[in-house]
View 1 (cartoon, rainbow, N blue to C red):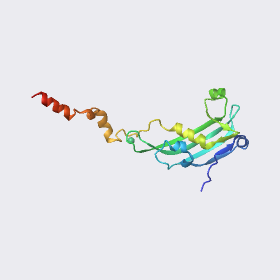
View 2: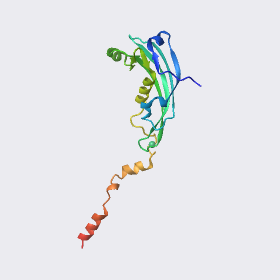
View 3: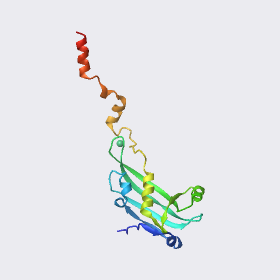
Length: 168
Ligand SMILES: [Zn+2]
């Protein structure tokens, strides 16, 4: 069994020894992300290393891969979204470094970076805002609803009666 990744890494230490890491993060450890998902069964494969960037700050480089299950907004059934995200994040850069590099950012606290939080943020950003199956007919009732939006406002039976009365 593969060893679980650590949540925190000391940036300077990892940069100086060129730390490289690979492993799995379980969805159960990412509670904010889980709120966006339909089921909690997916492993997140993560691979990353630390190095000094071309700017004054270190960076985290790598990639992550996951298949997340969300709810299709058309049929409300499960829909799997494969995500593969390249990571290139400057660690606690200044505003001008962000602008100059146009790279994403991860913030460190007391010289340490929370990799789980970083992965979670990247995956949440990677999810579609509105998830819909490629098959536009995934909900057989969807089409009829759009074609007959007036269906619900059919003439009510009492007004029909009222009309009959006035013809007498
Ligand atoms: Zn659907």
